[in-house]
Image 1 (spheres, rainbow, N blue to C red):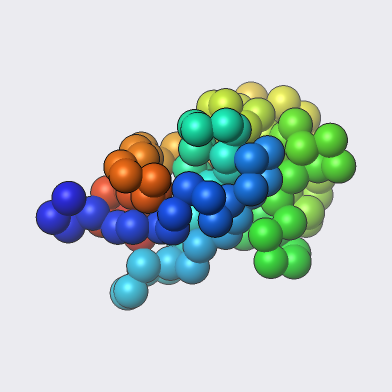
Image 2 (cartoon, rainbow, N blue to C red):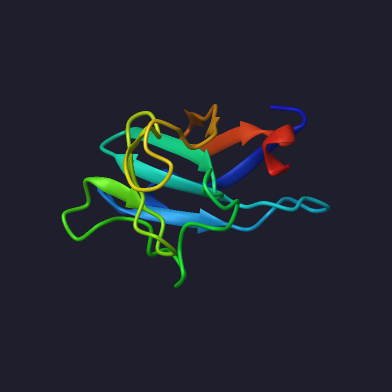
Amino acid sequence: MTGDRILCRLDEIPDGAARGFPPARGGFVGLVAVRRGVAVHVYVNSCPHLGIPLESLPDRFLDGAGRHLVCTAHGARFRVEDGFCVSGPCAGDALEAVPARIEDGVVIVPAEAGL
């Protein structure tokens, strides 16, 4: 685990919800993690269309149904499973995925994921 970044405990992200994380020390862009059961999908919190954070309010990343990540600036919608943009000005593009793993109930990403 040397050099890896601990985001949080898995139980700190409610199942079906998303949580944002600030940039790592010295980094510029934060991360967003979405929990689906025991799986967590992590992406760089930056819309591929404008390069801005997806949310306008803390941890408000998902649509009302909890099916898609949404960029609140222009409504682009991204699949949780792979970050692919299904609608909006960046349709066909994708969020930048970050490899994540869960060890002993803790969500961990590579240190370089702090960007």
